[in-house]
Length: 487
Image 1 (cartoon, rainbow, N blue to C red):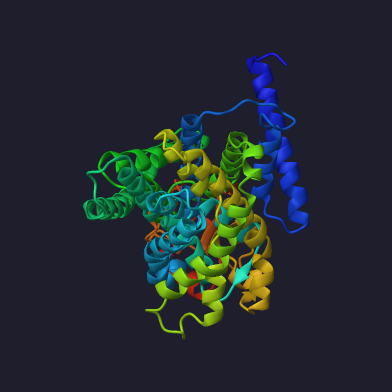
Image 2 (image 1 turned 45 degrees about the vertical axis):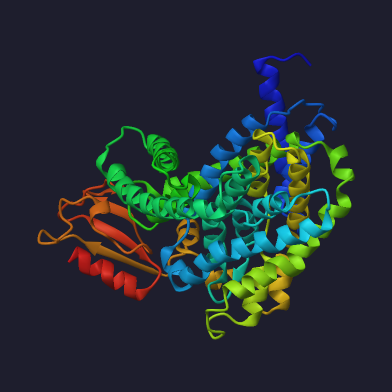
């Protein structure tokens, strides 16, 4: 086939189509869809049926950064802070101390397993695979409609969305120590705290500013608001990096902050990002699948399998139990902790981080990339597939209806309370747009009746005297609070 724009588009469309079909088929058998995206990428590569030549780590890294922005931002904007708040410190301990301990344990094991690697090279591999992957965790927990007790689901999602800075810091530090004899570990500690503090601080402030930007700018087309949020997302990543913070953490915090504020067209934007995040996951895993050469994996099966089993059975559980030792068992039982250790999913993020040594031309960079690819694949197949079963065996699963989030209820229109209210001339809401009323998040103004005409409102809709509005609410308390606003 000749290379032309039409043929390139055809190949891309075919790969996307095959990925979705393969993922759907695999889901019926309980397999995570992400592993099939990787498989399609491998089969389309130079050693597969597609014979697509792709061996450009810099392009793969660029695609990885773009797609991870969407995945992390979507995870943040669709997360309810009220669910995270009770488990915030547990999640923070896992995303910092837990990642550090996982890297150390894995690095030491790999050093004694493979004699040809120096200790720093072994620690580099441990650092790359130390964090849980946001794309994998969000995908498996949400696509399987898995309900978990004791706020485990928001804690796992918060950990996966916020633990990349520690893994990134450890990876960059190991590369710097390998390539330079002058750098010391203690010299990199201020760099880590600067990345963490600036990433969180800028992400939060930018998320607050983004709300006002969304509500202040009046765009002629609703679809442009989605484009505006994409610009806000990329600016969060870029500016945070520019001033010395961690861009990935800033993007997640910006999304988390925005998702818990009221802004124009919030629900439609959430739906759009959910679909776009899936597209980005497919693109990312296809790209990483194209980058790998299967014949190189065959010689590393033994090593890759040994490291994978060690991480699943020892490294991750030890790191989790030590990280959570500060918290009472009443808040997190041994069953909860064991389940958290099992959801140490690896995926795209470790593979993207494994590209960094390749760009720096380290001696064993290709071997590290192949081992990391193998570890991520094994993790998705074993841990990703068995998460619902493990939750059931540990008796921490529960019906999804009991834990369904506000966002999901908005989509399904399953409000339990409905009330029609007439706006009097003395009402606080007269001549005010809906987004300025600070309604509870679980409340929707579904319909406005005005002069015998019906209006489907959005955040910019301005209420007038004698309007009749239909209010949907999940609870009597939220309905009562909303009614007090319209009095």
